[in-house]
Image (cartoon, rainbow, N blue to C red):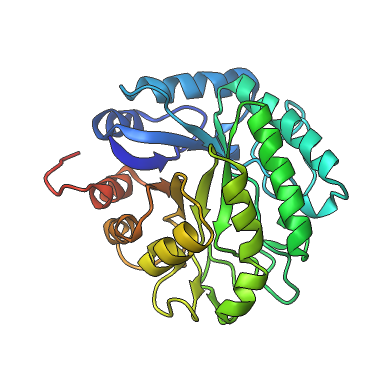
Length: 297
């Protein structure tokens, strides 16, 4: 088994994808809007994907936050508001548990939420209304409510983007964000929701940010920084759960897909996200993710 979570191209996996998944035996799969047409189709797709691998308890992920980031949309699924629009933790909880029931009914087991980043004035809008607030205390309260709602409905939450993406001056999907805020300020603001969430759940996963924090590691994004993963995420924030990278296709990362995968695993990620790509690119990520260099796919 390779510690990678892969996406697929469409409403059903292609023969080439099935062949690759069967050989590589990925940890799990992630769904996007391109994969979700109707409840019956999503259930069938999940069954097809899980049939490719021999291990049990295959995680099936989705990004279902609300607002701009929703993969399941009306008319088959309920509309989900953006994080910024919520005014109470109770409303966040009720929305999250309702959403969890929708996901669980389809066979989805992991939701890449809550987004515990801060809403920072002047930063790139890639987080924007995906954040609950600019106030760390509000973000903490509402993120915990979402986490508890998802868990209450049988879904594993993914706390993102550690240790904080809210200050990114550019979109990490397109460019490399460099946050120059000093460590003392990050500790007093951005890190606080993640510290609270780390102690609020033993089930939740975490997701790293493709962001450079120049006062901690001026060279490597968090995803590929041993200092940030070990010193900040694992020790200072206290997150001891399963840590997955953000998607390796994002342009904040450089190098070949094999290099991206290897650097991320060596830094301390437990698994990698590869949301789209060719089978050749999937293979490169599989090779880079392996602890041993002698496995063939």
